[in-house]
Length: 591
Image 1 (cartoon, one colour):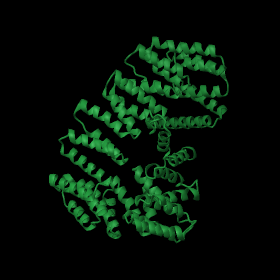
Image 2 (tube, rainbow, N blue to C red; image 1 turned 90 degrees about the vertical axis):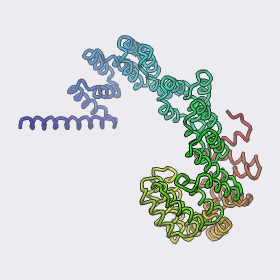
Image 3 (cartoon, rainbow, N blue to C red; image 1 turned 60 degrees about the vertical axis):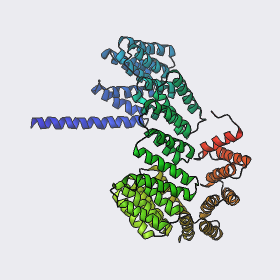
Image 4 (cartoon, rainbow, N blue to C red; image 1 turned 135 degrees about the vertical axis):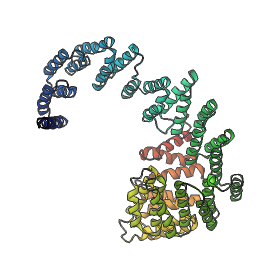
């Protein structure tokens, strides 16, 4: 019984203490230092070993300019705990707050000299300097500790301080020193460096890092420098340059081709087909693994499909692949791509559906089944068989609910419902997807949801949106002329409606696709004239600049619209590319 009462008393005491601590901190955070100092004084008296209470008490007194009280407290603490040499920094900082720099310096130096007697105090002294924004002293403390005790490593702290001081080159060099001593730091260093570089190769920090890496590669060649250069070039979307580094790494190891395969995939996704082709040709030349062969040959075939190689040639390449490798579980991805080719390029939907249904009978895993069913449903939507398509999408969504494949299927359910004009159900699905683990799916869901929401405000019957959705479906089905004609009706009948700019933009892209370049130019200009601050205004500027540069051969106009993005749309997602292209057209030297 006595034991139980004792336990209850301890519990009650701890609870009271926690409440006091919470209240004291609340006073401190709200700037009520008079009340906070009373409570922290009491807490410190009860718990003299608790440095947190002591530090808050010091801070409260300093905020109230009770500098003599602080000096007394620190000296009392040092008397009772003479091994807490980091307190000399607090005493020095107390003098600095009174603009007594000479006195402050004496105590800072005293704290630094204590590292020589007791190197294990180095971290605490460095951190205390750092916490009080005495960054130069913090650097001295960390470096001195590492000199006295070479087994210690405070390069992360040193690099952080250089970052705070905006000494970016020193910061990068320190991070590279870390990797030089231990390659296991490579991944962590990428995370830290990644906060300071951008996807703009002309950014001064990118240039600084590149120069440092090239210098190290020349003076002390090691794989880490090639790895980091490749990583930097990938951030800058310079995939052929990244490939040079990956080839150098592979030639030294002659083992793992996965980095080059991944680089080829990234380049393909960003439509740098030359770099992607170079990567996959290299894989084929240097690998005898079936998996690598199949991946490379499929991507090379897809590049041909994207670059308008003739339909007959592509059909021949598919048949050669099936002849060499068969139609089995190893070639599932090739079969799926072939079905898409049959449906969307050759308009042979029945044959495409048969290919996918035959593939589903093979011994494959649930993720492969999910992918095949999604592609099958896409073809059914293309063929206007919405109900059957929704059945397949729903099966995938239910079977792989928390996987990207399942979330993609849910988005397709929403998109198909949108095509059908069932906007409420589409929005129900899209609201769930806004929290998708895939950023791409989340963004697509947000865009479609905004399209529906924005264009339903002034039109309760959603007549304009229904017409636009039909055009969107026709575009998905590659029925470009019909889509353009439908958008003409939208533009004619719903002038001034929020859907107008969307219709103009969609039609402009279709005009480009069908090589009606002057009409595309007209639409982009119309969007800009309608509302220069509209959500599609920067898109119109960028696509217009691209049109002038790549198809209408009007360099001056391209420069004009790239420049407008730089100065009028500084938060645009096209800013970096616009700046790069503008500078190149202007004739600036590119680093």
